[in-house]
Image (tube, rainbow, N blue to C red; front, side, top):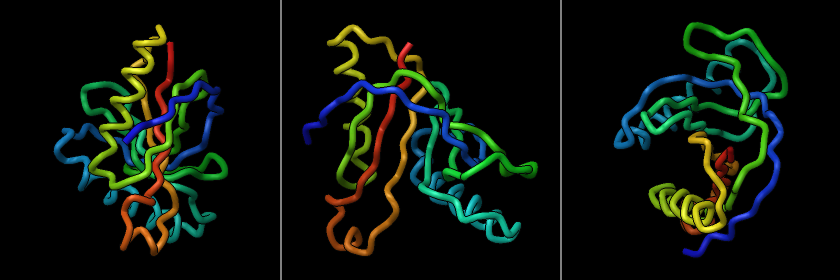
Length: 151
């Protein structure tokens, strides 16, 4: 799949997250579980319904924050934390297809940045589209936005 890369500025986005250090091979299990945990917390606390799911990769060592967009800061727990997606200049692309192929979108951004002399900061994130029933039958329509914060 060919990814079109764009440069833009991201604004800080409020998030509710589970923080952890997760090996790459465990991300497919951790990400949906953490997103579900955040949604359960918001339902049980009577807080406004969260937005899209997010995964924020803080370094190349497995430090990650996974959860959902929220409308405002909140008081969390030992497990659920208030955080923000970063603000700043980013390289971004939209990935359509199964989550197992997201590495292609990440690679495309890194290659594009190197070719255009942009330095990545080491921080990246994914924002997952709200699940649509049709995606169960046609995974090529699954939308994920991928961002790399630039130095």
